[in-house]
Structures are given as C-alpha cells and as structure tokens.
Image 1 (tube, rainbow, N blue to C red):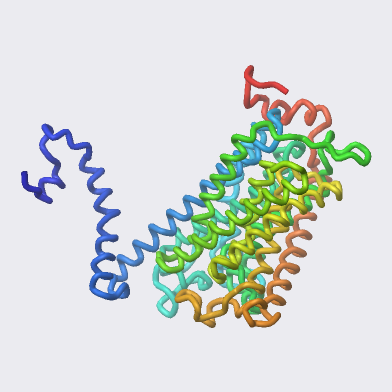
Image 2 (tube, one colour; image 1 turned 30 degrees about the vertical axis):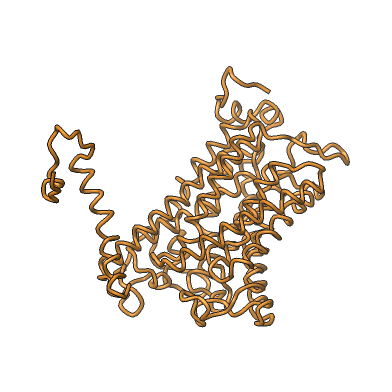
Length: 484
C-alpha cells in the first residue's frame, strides 16, 4: 500500500477505519506545517531564514498557549484556597475565584490595559481605553505605528498581547481572595476587584512594564514578582487589617489553628499553579525563543523544587513534623521568588533564591499570626513577602548583560551584587519595591475603607458561624454529604 498525500487529505477508504475527519486533518496540518517550516530553516543553517509570517504564527501560538496556562491558574487558586478553608465556605471561595476573572476581563479591557500599556507619560498611559486606537501589530520597533509603544517589541497581534496581560491581571486580583476568605461579603470583594484591576494594577504596571519612570530608573521585574504578586499581596494586607481575624482564630494570647477541610484539593491546586507557572514565566518572553524559554522554564522549576524542599525541612524542624500546607506554600514561595529574576539568573542562583523563599514563607506565616493578621491560606507570606524577596534577588543574583543571547547589556539589569555589579541594581530594585508597595497599600486601603463605610466589608457573626455558603449564596458545596 503506497502513501498518497492527496488521498490522506481527502480521506482514506472507510474500510481502513481511519479516525481522522477532514477537519481534524486540517487542524493537524495548521499546527505541524509551521514547525516543519522552522525545521527546514534550521537545517539550512539559520533560524533567521524563517519567513516573517511564519515567525509571527509561531510567536502567537506560543504566547496564546502560555496565556492559557496562566488562565488555568485560576483553577489552581480555587482548589488551593477552598482546600485550605473550611467546608462551610467552599461555595463562596469557588464563586470568588470564578467571578474574579470575568470581572478582570471587563475592567482590564475597558481601563486597565490602557493605563498600563497605552502611550502617556511616566506615570500612566492615557490611550487605548476599550482596546481602541491605532495599532499595526505585529510589526515591531521602528516599523510599529500605534498607541501601545511599550509593547512594540512583541511581534504578535494586539489581541494576543492583551489576552496574555489580562491573565496576569486576573492573577493579581485572585491573590486577594484567599487572604480575606471566610468573612468578607461577596459584593464588597467584587467591587474591590474591579478597582484593583481597573486602576491600581494598571498604574503601577505602567511604571515598570509600560515604559514608566521605574523602567527608566533601571528597575527590572521580568514576569511580576512585584508587578503581579506583591501588588496582590499589598492589596490583600490592607483588606486583612480592616476586616480583622476570623471569630475563632485568636482567643486572648492563644492562636487557634483552623485546619482546612480538604488537603487533597489544596495539593491539586498547588500542582496546577506549579504547572501554570510554566506559562507565567517563560510566556513573558512573548516570543517563541527556544533558548530563552528553555532557560526560564528550568530556573522556574528548580526554584519551585528548592522552595518545596526548604519549606519541608524548615517546618519539620519548627513543628516536629513536615507540614503539608507549608510544603505547598514552599513550592509557591519558590515560584513567586524566581518570577522577577527567572531570565536574568543562572540555575544555581535560581535554586538559592527558591530555597531562601521556602524558608522565608514558613517564618512569615508565623510572624503574621503573631501580629494577629489572619490569612487563611498564607497569601501574604507567599505573594507579598516572597514577591519582595524575589524582586530584590534580581539585584543580588543577575548575571549581567551579554551572558545569555536574549539578555543584552542594554536590555536587562546590570550584574547583581554577588556577581560583581555592586549595589546599584539592588538599590533600583529596593526603590521599586517601596514605591509600588506604598501606592498599592494606600490605594487599596482607601477603597477598602470606602466600602467598609458604605456597605460594610464583613458578614454578620451569625453568617460567619453558619458559613458563607448559606449566608451569601444559599447553597452548600457538600449538600447531605459532609457537615462540620
């Protein structure tokens, strides 16, 4: 039997029972042909020979795939947070994690993307609201003509740029959900999320990624240790302060443990987040650059592994037994810690950064509890504290320009303190951490306070004791199956 491409495309004889339909074969061709074309170009000796249209297709496919992984992190947050909390609040937590991306989509499309990436001044963008205005993406650099100049380096369509950045914006809002869990009104959380993504996140993001004043100062945050994670952490901290602790958490000088109801889903959530980070960090290249993607995915994974091991050992020493919740948060701490520096450090440095984050997260959880800050899932320790650590780590461990092919001397941070670069880069990183923190904390506190004075932040004592599932949503996650 001889192979005929024409007969394969039109479809084989029904006698063969071949499973593909015509639509399936078309889809397969669309996916495979660009890769074959790239392979031919490489075989000829130069990746640069890939036709521009094919390169745009490859870059777009990669960024869309990475954005989908980041979007899937919403499922990870939902599983993690609900597992770490009590069964009577499961519906509420799932509802918040589901609605937050819908809210983020509209707020970021209407306002946030323009404030963050639209042409404007050093403080904020003022072009591109509702994703409108001139733009000739995927043309880049000097060929680009439009109002989103800060993204002109990415050779992909505007809508792809928007969707990728939207997935990040949704992550920042989701961080808040876990820290304020089990006592906040659903409506108050919804309104706050709109303001965070629509305004605060976009403004501070413009300073760093939109060509704003922190970028000019030399502050670097490759994938968002500060821009995403610390911003979400600062917003969560202000909510935790104004909400106060859960009713049963503290009794005089005693700190009561409130165990989560399902460590299986919490562990699943942690693993989903680990997977999603392989889109979060490598996807921030916004181009199908094999060298950069490969390097970043390894530094990301090794930091996560080191964070898990370090948190395991630390909790074992501290509590006498290895604490699963700390192991999960150790993974996330390592991931948050490496996010700013993943493209700028070598693999041994990534392991050190992740390991330090794994130790920090354990003691940070204990410190916040000692200060009477009630954070049911450890979001403040993972995202705020380890986000700060990861941002400062750039100034300590960055290898300097012209070491890696994607990291030219004028396209990344200078060498860190431990690599002979002095304190200049570390100082820039410190300034960025402080000013972003001050702005986000001030903005968030103001919004939380207005909500508290106008509609209240916290559910009633009766609703909290009964569970937010019944009080806020009128349903149970485990009807007639599990009751506390």
